[in-house]
Length: 51
Image (cartoon, rainbow, N blue to C red; front, top):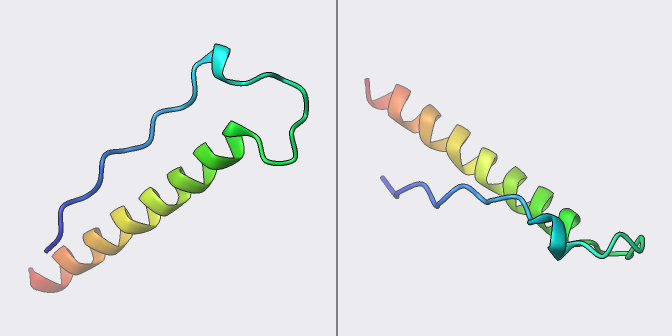
């Protein structure tokens, strides 16, 4: 079983320029968080199969 990667941390207030960028730092955060949640759910499912 692989280890769960570290949960992404939201950007600090100063990291977003609030200019409406087409690819905002918040977009990157939410993509990373979704990938982390998928990985976490997958590991939970695998551990339940082993039980």
